Amino acid sequence: MKKLYKGSVLVISLLLLAVFGMDAGAEEILVADDFNRPGNLCMGTMSDGAHGWFEMDRKEDDLVSGRGTTIFIGYRSGTNPVVGAAVYGFTLADGTVSVKVHWINTKVKGRGRAAGISYRANTIEHACDAYSGKNAYHVRITPDWTGKNDIELVYWGTVLATANISDKFAAFDLSVTFKQNSHKVYVNGELKIDYTETKANRTGAGYIGLGLYSTAVHFDDFKVSK
Image 1 (cartoon, one colour):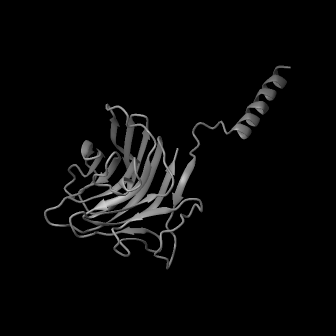
Image 2: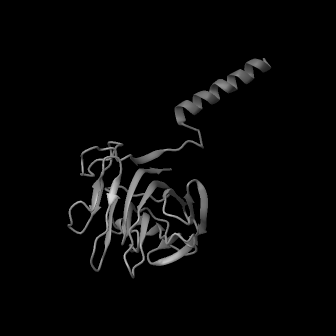
Image 3: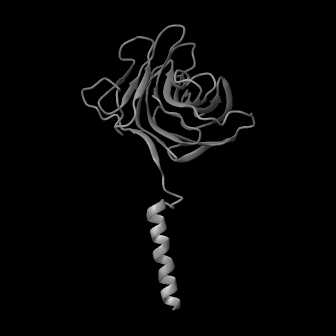
């Protein structure tokens, strides 16, 4: 009877796992885009077939566009050189956003430069502004390639935490995991920033986007999960 009892428990456990998805470690992919659109400059619908992009390029053609297998976001001159793209019609409070960042070695004299991920933005436009979008978190790479403070976690225009990541021009796998007041930033799989928010009313759902300031970047393999 003991063997039968153990076997019955095992069968029931497997059935519950299959029916209710009780694998606590399983990743649920909510949004994904590999940008594999050869010959098509239009961002349009993502490769997941369910989501699309909102583009903010200040009316200048092709500053946000597909490049076959990546998304290119280019530098815009002027007094407000903010360019970016955000997930249209989608908001999230807790989850993980990841993307590959390929730097194009550009630098505008007298200006800082940045590129990265924005999340929990209160408007879709602010999710396109990785530099200082209002009421949003930003994980931005701001390199001078000296290895000092090359990555920042920012809320609005306030720097919350910094870390060193590189001493050279490179491509990075960038991701941020956020849950309630916890924010963890990873570069190439290595935890670089572990920050706990102390301010109230910053845990609500918001828009997610990619953007830059005073530089040009290729993004690839974008994914949102929880």
